[in-house]
Amino acid sequence: MNARIIGLVVGVVFAAGMAWGQPEVEWERTYDNLSRDVCYSLISTLEDGYALAGISRAGFSDPADFCIVKTDDRGTQLWTKSFGSPQNDDVCYDLVQTGNGEFALGGNTYSYGEGENDFWMLIVDEDGDSLSSHTYGAVRADYCNAMIQTVDDGFALAGSRWYWVGENWPPRDSANACLIKTDPNGTTEWVREYRASEFMSLTQTNDGGFALIGNNGLGLGAVTIFRVNSQGDSLWSTPFEADEVTIVYDIIETRDRGFAVIGRTGHGERDHDLLLLKLNSDGEILWSRTYGGAGNTDVGRSIRQTPDGGYAMAGYTYSFGAGDDNGWLIRVNADGDSLWSLPCGGNGSDDFMSLVITPDSGYAMAGQSGGDFYLVKTTPDPVSVREPHSTLSPLTFKLFPAFPNPFNSTVTIPFGLDESAPTRLAIFDPLGRRVADLTGRFGDRPYAGNHSVVWNANGMPAGQYIIRLEAGNQQLTQRLSLVK
Image 1 (spheres, rainbow, N blue to C red):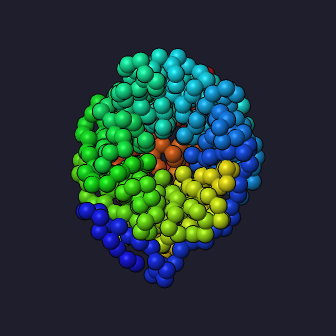
Image 2: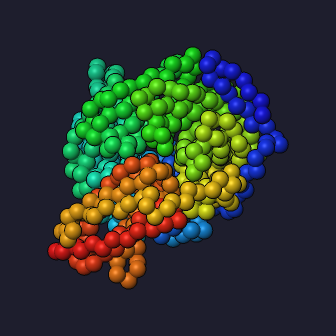
Image 3: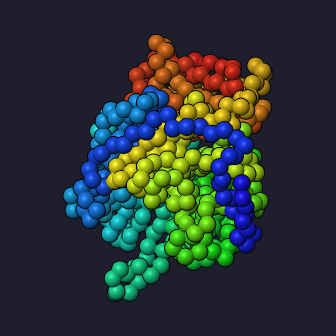
């Protein structure tokens, strides 16, 4: 492994013969919806398959539509649906599955809403059929880059709001980063704007607030990390100071209640490296690392924390692999030291935009390959497999009484962990069928401490249900009574 210094940022160049083994590609799939498709978001579904969302267009200059593809656990396509109008661009950047099996797609639309462009959230059922549509914006232009479901079953959407000043086209002289919070029905609860050009990603924090990353244009070091409370009020903001062009794409809350940010930094049009920042809970940047080859563009788009406290990162690379650019999966330890690097793809253009950790300790990455949706599944990560999972004694985690119980529509489920451990929370009917998976509300390895999750049972029949909390190799259950 070779290293190079760029300012105060350590750049790591991957070399052959690294000390750690690495996973291999188990299978890969492409999904040809039209001729120019890009997947921006990948999730694991309640049925242990995958769902991919992004854009689909007939040709390079044709309008884009929202597109969602549902697959089984081997990547076999079950169905695909597209939404939009034939005249305008409608771009989907994010996807979540709700506890009742529906999907929410978030992005922006030129086709619907009040302004030139608006935030757009579309809700579809488990078969991809449209249920409801929600736009957010005014006569000005609003662009949504990210969406999450919140712990209260609502949603948060982040992006930018442009102000029109002057008569020249395009009349966009000023923009603010924008955060919109909705209730479970998509009704706006509040809107906040902040001093940045746009938000690219957000995550809900352990205390119910939010952490967001903002780009301030294409200037040097033009990146800010924001921390706000549950009402959107600012708690702190941290700029990343660099002598290079820097753009960030994803943020996660880490197990120590700090944050990790991924993006790219470098000089000119081609000499960019993947950038990883680590912050503490107060927003102080603890360290930064870069990864890539000299004179090429290497970009990080998605990051997840691994069971051993390290990080898996997905993006694309011009430095490694067979093609012009290849999908790129990188594994580092908790201090950012490189463990292995896996380029994926063929001789053309292949990019990863989104990453999930799979139940077998492998990875699934999605993006585009040759104008098609692209999904890759790896074998288990030897580093993660080598690290034993936490084994909790029966007294180190608790499932507190849910309230209210009996309940009419929503119920709060509190639980506590004495130490961080792989955790899953789900709801089952009396026949043992899983009807809701609430794990995504707190991540698959929550922090030590107390947590609570709200289950919205609208649309579910009255009757008895069972909560099952699994932590480490233990499980606890509790009965719920839904009355109508």
